[in-house]
Length: 435
Image 1 (cartoon, rainbow, N blue to C red):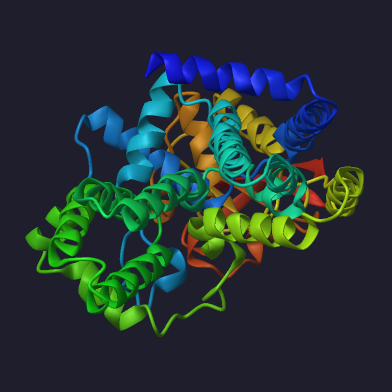
Image 2: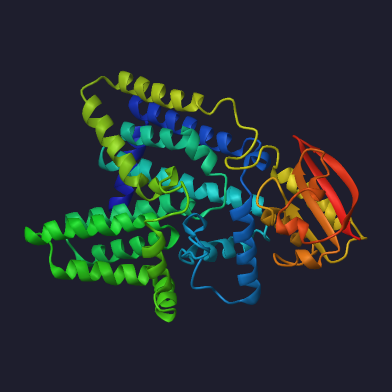
């Protein structure tokens, strides 16, 4: 085994010494640099930390503090119908809990670390495609990973779909092994990673359907047997075991709610780009195959130029570089959130206080997070009627704390305007006290 590995390393080194190998290595280095430059540029102002991130991190921090792992993750906010929704699996929270402890709950550092999941996914695909098919096809996939504008922006947030690409790479790898080797252990491992992926996002349900269809066709043709399916299902059960335990304990709540809400969402976000993240490995393999079979008779230099042209076009779509993170309210950056939280934390006159952000979700999940990190605890989401001090972030200098009809603001009753601060980008910060 060790001898074979040494031979493979020597072969790879000898390939790098050739002009073609050297050119591919140069492209790899260029794409790696582009990957990190695009994502780390002005990171604190272009990362996403808003409603979902604030709420999820708070729940994870409480889970770790209580030393009681949950069996479910966050609720799927886009699938709530009449106040009832279903939840994803808990692995998302488990990973965030570990990262929170490692990075002392620094969400900027945690979000930066999330980039490594994407980088590792692209690196594994590059090597896998390069070794099994063609190194130029592999470097094309690697270049698309590095430069695609949607991937660049979506990478900069803490959210469950961002864990799918890496898991899906292993899912596809072991499925390929299961289909080619026809061994139970590979069907079992395919099931493990399918179950893990399903814990992160319900779009993986399509993988269950696809794998079931592939097995059924193979079973009819006597290529696969019943044990292959059994081992896959056992693996999937183990892969998503905490979630299944929760449903067994709660009369299949998630299953029933998914059936009720899943095909009748109250949101336009029924199918969005990140639904494809669990299938990126297959999509990029298809791109690699199309590139290889349509260009293999073309000279190496022209294939190289074609890769350059494709990635340059994608790269140009990243410009002008964004000032704010995708889905973030313009100007409400992490830098500004931390500044406002600092004002609140330094206010020694506050008592029984609450926070609200009228430029996003009124409950201000992200602002609550930053305030809690300095040791000050707002009353809670249902504490507005009992607040003596209200801190409000809103658009424009309108002293709108008197005008907003929402319960979170109006429930404080008669209130006195204390002061306001212009935060820039038409965003203002207000302080009100109960009279």
